[in-house]
Length: 113
Length: 113
Image 1 (cartoon, rainbow over the protein chains, first blue to last red):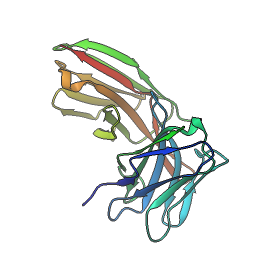
Image 2: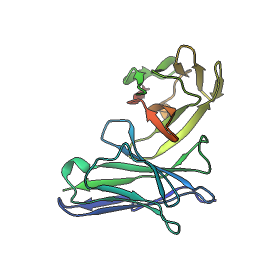
Image 3: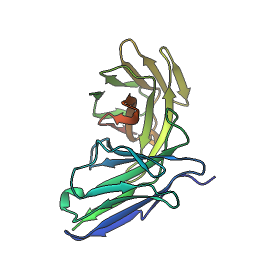
């Protein structure tokens, strides 16, 4: 059973471009969480999704950020018109049910130049 | 709003010494995690603590949970260089049908020969 797969592992974008980060949960997991880690900081919750539904997006910036978890395919975190402050590591975690341990992917390290 | 505080944030210790990292949190929770993160890497789950008085040990690391005091500790026994990493505690938070992990800022541990 493969773990949580994130791609790309590293992503470089110029200011103003779009960044798309992908997360394929573990097999049988229908709950996906996205977290952001700024340099030298802990992880901060962004969004919690189940298949085709956003359960909680209270940690998402109001503008430029969106997330989806379609019926088929990976979960996508999309950042439009990136700025330097978006540079961070973005981690995805998945779990089979709520209130069970979620497992983290390797992360995508976004650098905005 | 749940707050999680770790201390110390930086810890430099010599091989063979013992030390404890503390994790305080502000509201009731059923689950607390300890993770290890190496530079540029993802999170490695070390311990999941589910109940008051829970104690778990793995090698030179031992974690405990006091839910009444809202305190968890990660004790390091006879440190070795390989334990150098950043350690995070994270508290599981349920609110309004949603679930998320709230992380401490991390303790950067350096074990010197």
